[in-house]
Length: 319
Ligand SMILES: Nc1nc2c(ncn2[C@@H]2O[C@H](COP(=O)(O)OP(=O)(O)OP(=O)(O)O)[C@@H](O)[C@H]2O)c(=O)[nH]1
Ligand SMILES: [Mg+2]
Image 1 (cartoon, protein in one colour):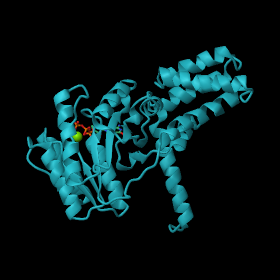
Image 2: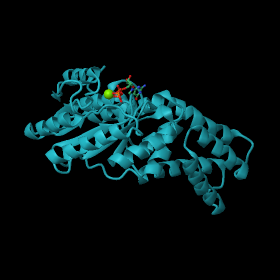
Image 3: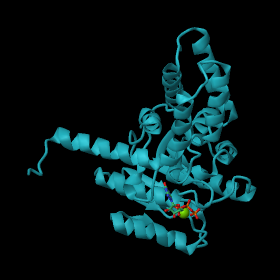
Image 4: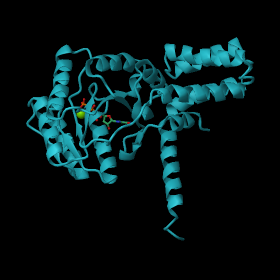
């Protein structure tokens, strides 16, 4: 047996490992969405109004949300009316294409690492997965040979600072921190300054979880952002909102309020492995016109995957 497969084989193996993790991570949503569609395909209804009603039920059930479901059905009805869609297989194929288009239209360009240091501010409600996302990205980028620095900007709980220091030590990167209770803007200031001085590629700055409706805490977050921009004009280059997929459609209003206050650049949707509501991702990207940058499909470090629209839809529909 040879353990030195060709480079191509290694790449292929990596790709198929990535896809199978994605597939298993999306199992619950896949059962709901693709499972429901499968039933329709094998059911009695012919291509027509009844079939569209059944499809609507499945899409709503997977938490695709009302506006985006209506949009999708309208696209499919047009396809049927124009005779581009003729049978049920055609409906499924057209549905996949619409879903991919919704995601890709909002994907935009990923300009990460075009400037150095690239400053990322990570925000979201309590428990959405901010700190673990930072840890996983740190590990990923460190493995890619990038210089990463962390800012323990969640000064609200001592345990949060501890959690960042543990990640930093595990991965072997510096972490700028102060005592719990310190001003998060001061930590962010130090972290960005250190990132510049030490010629880091990227800085990831954590923040305390907060409700989008808490005005004082949202003001605190705006200040963090302003201060970062003072140390390094143009920074933060990315403000990432971390969303917990298990809350389904509630994440839409949550994201809107965060976006109003903070001008978000991208979304990370965590805990997709724990929910059948993964369809919310289509609604949120379409309602906010924001790209999904990463998705969390499990607790392990490589369960945080760079988001790819086509892979995501393929995995949802995979047998
Ligand atoms: N199953 C699963 N669990 C996840 C995923 N991402 C994060 N978690 C878990 O979610 C929990 C909360 O994660 P944290 O990173 O501490 O969340 P946070 O947003 O930093 O929370 P606060 O600092 O309290 O606001 C942890 O137990 C994580 O392991 C995911 O993709 N899948
Ligand atoms: Mg945290």
